[in-house]
Length: 447
Image (spheres, rainbow, N blue to C red):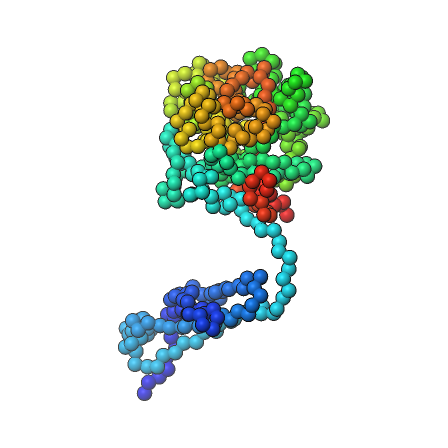
């Protein structure tokens, strides 16, 4: 006589079908999952859209099965088909849900990751480019997820028009417009979002002098009434001050809440606490920009001291393929900085990446970059950039409303300041903002 034999749970398989509506078809939503994969877990969750106004019927069928070739028995000698006994299995399935009718609540603002929003435009939109920077001597665009796989990628807004406006709040809760340069990656911080202020800092933000953490007092704001919203890059002695960003007066001011031993506010004071909580320190490269020959691609390589230059080791005259001035730091890690010349170059149409930024670029390339229109929006003010120049150890790069990237003395030159912030990759956006000038993205405040 045959006997009933219970099959071990671990041998069971499960398949789930879903049918929407009376006339719908069975759709397989789970196929052949094992008992171990679903035991004690939710195997399927479905939600009805909150704006649904009609009755919806959804039918589920769960099949529990075992194949004929499954080996059973204590000794593993028989398949199911060979076993000469009745077999059975038993499992318990819970179905839970809230089926009560509810009134619709007012819709809350949509939220989402800012990085996800940007990456969603990276391929095919023409607005954001994926830049393969794995070989910094040969930076190039890649056009698909497959082409970019396994590479070090920077995602940049590029072209004449970019919907990359975002509001950041000041310490007085004033919404200030910024522009998103793109998404970058740091060895320590990981992915981060790089933004630049849409306008130069107003006169009220700039102090006349600022005492830095190194104990030195730097001149910051111009005393010339015609340039009262302009600042020095590095004016300590007013003579032969170097283009070394880590010891520059502007760097100390931008990365401080308040001067050392005094009451003068640093730039961080003017940011809301929420914005400051999202700032991350990242590594900046301080190789020189070769003002008369560099294309965007070459500038990118030289900023990162590629070719024969070794970090913190350089020749006294900045030649022989080395792009860090003697005595200067090769890198600096911090939260607030300025744009690279290559940031401006790669914001232009790809056809301009072979043009020299200083010369032909300002005539033909400026009209193809959203940064040029931003400079016009910034009251046609010239602004400082981060990179030292290769011609003199006391010059730094700058850009002007005419569309060219140029240079000036760090202790005599006066330009506007458009800070660059590095935001955490966890930064989220809220609301219906589309990134246009009239409808910028907005950041969710931290809870």
